[in-house]
Image (cartoon, rainbow, N blue to C red; front, side, top):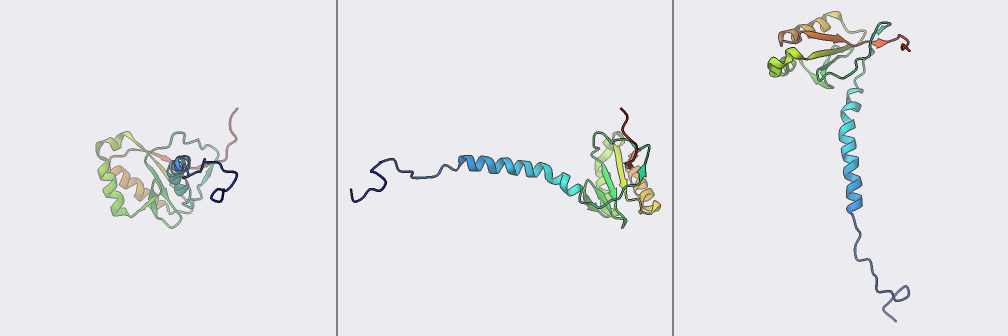
Amino acid sequence: MAGTFGGGDDDVISGINVTPLVDVVLVLLVIFLMTAPVIYQSAIKVQLPKARTGEDAGAKSPLNFTVNAEGKVFWNGEELGWPQLAERLKALGPKAAEETAMISADQTTAHGIVIQLMDALRSAGLVRFALNVESTATPKK
């Protein structure tokens, strides 16, 4: 009697089962890894020009280029200098001609920088471009 506590039950919890905790942590890690690129991409401050005839971009292109107000170029959220951009575009090879490049430029970006980006894309074999705008049109019913 002197050595027992709680009524003399012999069922003692000798360890904590951490399997459910590990499962929850892994699910949260997967969710974080999948949403992080979306959060990072939206962190680039770009005020798109407005247009009444703008359309929804639909499926995202793997070639999303953003030019911010300072003239910095981003590819899928990663800032690149002009030499690095040329190298990465060259690495695309012949499959580049099949892709469409989505260009999102801030409305205060100089026209020459957008043309410089388009010229670099054309030099790499990309011939299809889409310019991203913020649509002000009311959706059709």
